[in-house]
Image 1 (cartoon, helix red, strand yellow):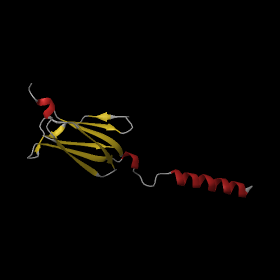
Image 2 (cartoon, helix red, strand yellow):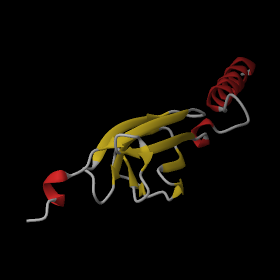
Image 3 (cartoon, one colour):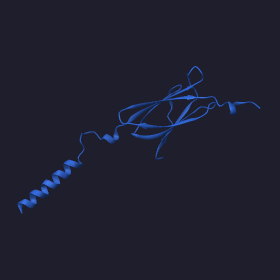
Image 4 (tube, helix red, strand yellow):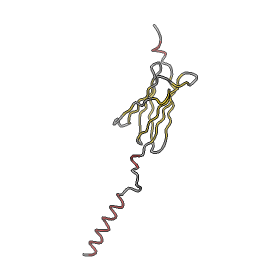
Length: 122
């Protein structure tokens, strides 16, 4: 009887030990940072009217961050894959798939090209 109780207590203790978090912080809540720099023209000037749209790769969530300054966007994201869309009215849009890692900063620089086909005056 003592042996059965000892095995049961040992099993429960081992189960609780293995399922407990390793540290006091929840690692799934750690976020990474995405910095999107948007340039245009031959002189790589910041795109003043640019917009950025970030969509979770699995389509669960999306966001359109505001520019901190012309051509500079920053946001915190949970680790994972994201599709980053960048555009500006007079330029061709761009898209790139980005991986965000916990406690890391990923910088994506988009150099926009002028959309000459649709800016021509007929």
